[in-house]
Length: 382
Picture (cartoon, rainbow, N blue to C red):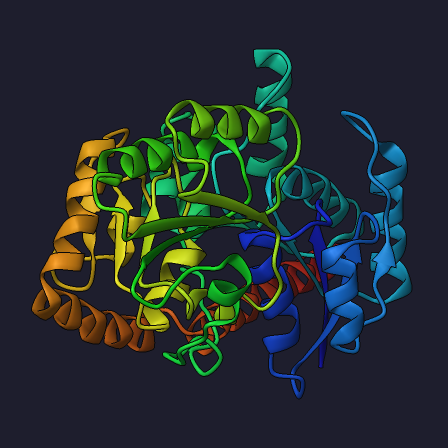
C-alpha cells in the first residue's frame, strides 16, 4: 500500500475543493492510503472529518511561507509519504518544493486560471519551480492546459488532462421542491438556477442582464447559489435593483446538498467568462436539468451544442436569454437534451472514471521514481 498526501490551499466550498475531497476518499483503499493536509478549519475540514479523515492543519500565510513548506515536509517524513497530490496553483508550488526536498513524486492539479500577483520575475519563479519540481501537472480540461502552455513556462511532456467527475448516483433526476417552497416560487414559475461562488469569473452580471431581457414574461425566477464575500456581491445586488429585478433574482448564499438544490431548477445557466472545467454544469446535466453555458473554456469540452446542452458566446445576455426562452418554449428540445446529457455524464464524467485516471498516473509516477532511485543506488555502489 502506498501513502498519498493530498494538499489544498483553501478551506471553503468550491469545485476544486469538492474534487480534492472526492479523490481523497475515492481511491482504492486496498492500494492507496490517503492523508490530507488543509490550511485551516472550514467546509473542507468539516467534510473530511465527516468522512473519517484526521486532517493535518498546515496554516498558510503570506506570499512565501517557509513554515508552511516545513509543515508539508514534516508530514511527508512522518507519514512516510510515497506521493504528493496537490490542488490549485500555490499548493503546486509548495508541494513541488516539498517533493523535491523529500524525494517523492508530485502530481499537481490545476482547476482554473489563477490570479497571479507580484512581478513578472516572481511569477516566472513560481512556474520554474513547478516545471522542475512537479512530476506531472494535471489540468481539468484541454483548454486550461493550452492556456498554461501558452505562457511558455511549462513543458507539455509533463502535463496531462483528467476531467473532473461526479457521483452520478447522488446527482440524479429526483424532483425536489424544498428551495422553491423556501423562496416562495410557484410550480408554474420557471426557475433558472446557477451554482458557484460569487467571483468575477462567474460573470453574474451577464445573468442579471439576461434576466432583464426575459422579464417581459413574469413566469421566470432566477436563483444564484454560492458563497458571497467582498465587494462584488453588493455590486451585483445594486445592479439587480437598478434593473428592477428585486423580486425576480435571489442570491441565496452557500448551500449544502447541491444535488437537492439542482433538482429544484427547471433550467441551469452558466454565464462564466472563464471556466477551467465546470463541475456544476455536469451536476446539472446529471440531475436532468437542461443547461445553457457560455463558451468559457471547460463547457465546450463537456457540452456538444444542441446535442446535450446549449452553448452561447461570452458576455452576451441576449444569447443567454434566447437560449433560455428556447428551452422553455420547445419541450421536445428540452427532453432531447436532458436524455443525451445524462448519457454524457455516465459515459465521461463519473467519479470512478476520474479516480481510475489518477490511479493510473500515480502508478506511473511511483514506478518511475523507483527506477530513478535504483539507478542512483547502483551508481553509489559502483
